[in-house]
Image (tube, rainbow, N blue to C red; front, side, top):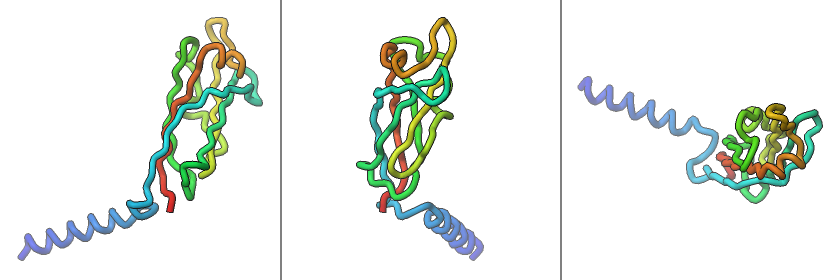
Length: 126
């Protein structure tokens, strides 16, 4: 009898956890891409790129994961993970900061250095 009650309690906990999410499982979606249209940010020594998420169909701001690649000067930058700005279901922007090795981040310098921001957004869209 104790096994049955423990099993029922575990099933209740698992069902409660499953239903505690932000939305139904069939509404969960993932969208990813790459961005390289760098512009000058509003702050010195920063480059900014905007990402349009409107085609992803999110109904609320998704969770974002990013990484920065390039042919030069992408090492020891700041911002690919923490520089996310203006996050919404429709999109976000990222500011990348760097001053070192005689390189100062700007829109033009990011383009010359071949920076590419890879991103993945996950969230709900029902």
